[in-house]
Length: 337
Image (cartoon, rainbow, N blue to C red; front, side, top):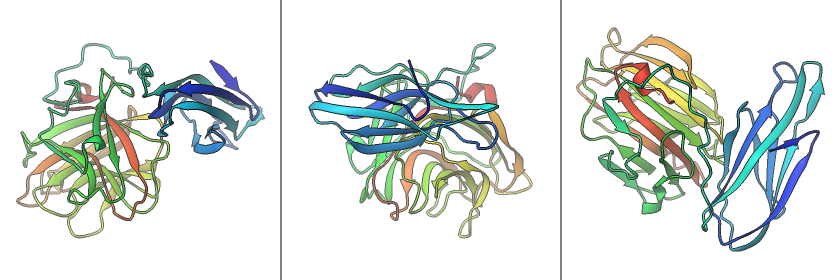
């Protein structure tokens, strides 16, 4: 482990057979008061900056650099910026490990420590957590190419596997998307479920150009889903319909890249705003109290989609990972551990 203090840096030259991505385990000491903020990590490969990210995690967390390296020697430099030291604040950057993934490299250990629990987790009604080592839990795969959705063991939130999703310019599969859909059951009026999962956005995940949906509860129709989690202009949001009008943000926060983010959403499904409701937890904290609204369109059942679906105005590759999707009848049955 190394501490980068007062604009410090660490440099290493490596010889590789070929690398797909670089995983850096890091944590930061942030300032609780002004000048508030997290330490900034700059990553350069062969002199070229590839990542500039705030390290807000107080525990060691995986920050992933999506950068392929050709066979040969490469110089990797990690530098610390945004230093501050005063009474009540000593901002620093801590590095634990750098792992090269691909080309025969060993995968890193799980990047996010499990949340402590008081007992065994209640059973879920349905699992879409990729622990089969495949996409078999999901009934529909929508991707422009086979490599756009891949089950991987090298970056997981829990268990042995997660799945990496990528959308590139022109990946048209009924729109620019790489998505999975549950087809064995649909959400019908009057049903009530908890949904829990984790998402990891790549450090270079684009934030401008338009919307990017990562979870949809899609109606049996074209058009906007009645409920979705998406990213737009660097803001992560839970949004609701109604159809054919501006969507309503129920909750939002600044997008944080390079670490696992845990979600639990509790929904009562109904086209009647007096019956339907939504509440939400984010990284273990309640962020949305129960909100009454119509969670379905009249005459349309809903079905669950996970992955990435984006506006064609977004340019460049969009990469993220999903893990641990569970559907159940309680918070305890679906929350990440």
